[in-house]
Structure formats: C-alpha cells, structure tokens
Length: 144
Image 1 (cartoon, rainbow, N blue to C red):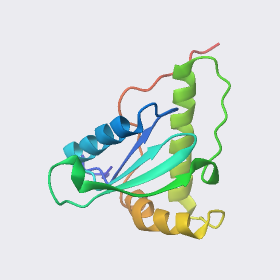
Image 2: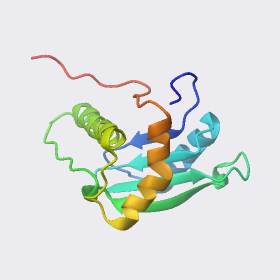
Image 3: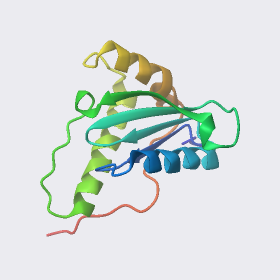
Image 4: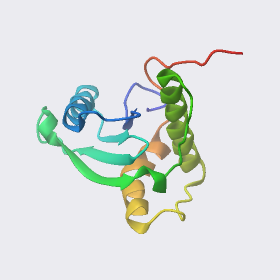
C-alpha cells in the first residue's frame, strides 16, 4: 500500500489449495478491478501466479495472467499443523515474510532468470513504492 494513502500497488492472495482455479482467479481479478490494483499475486504452496491489470476495461477480462512459477522455487512451506486455520495463517506469514525480505535486500540471485525478471518487472516496484501489510481477518494462533 501507499504509505500515505489507501492506494494499493500490489495485492496478494494466499490459499492453501485451489479447488476451482477458474473461480478463484475470477474472484481475484474482480477484486483487483474493484480496488484499482495494477498487479496481483495468487500464491499457493505449489504455485505463484502473477497478474496485471491492463486497464482496458472495468471487467475482469482486463486482468491477465502474466506468468506462473513453482512456489518451491520462491519459498518453502511445510506445515503439519492439524487445524486448517493455523496452516493458512502460517502460509500467509511465510508469504509476507518472503515479500518483506525481498523488499529489504532485493537479492534474487537464488531464483531462475525468468522469475527474477518477473519479480523485477511486477513485484519489486510495488514493494519499493509502498508498505507491506496484511489485510482482512487474520487467524491468530492460541497461546499455550
């Protein structure tokens, strides 16, 4: 987000599993249009998908899938937590920490060249321009 307004430069949705990719993608594209966000990431433990709004119309058809990558090439997430809510929260945290690390040092040398290029073109500018924060309800684990 912009540090001094509610403008979003990048929106990220994390999901443990996509049961219906078409439906999830359609909802995600509509959300990007509604909030006026130019770039979006749809992230599962298996796949990182990068979307861009081409600003051709106010419909989800204006948002296109730019590229997709195996998430294991970006971050590693393995959770054996029994509760789905806890796994979802841990996955959200993993993705947020990855973005924060990327913004802090911009070292992408461990990634394949095509992923480096996609991150430099679509993700890094948003990270450098704004602040990273979680949106919406977040599950908080119980203290034991």
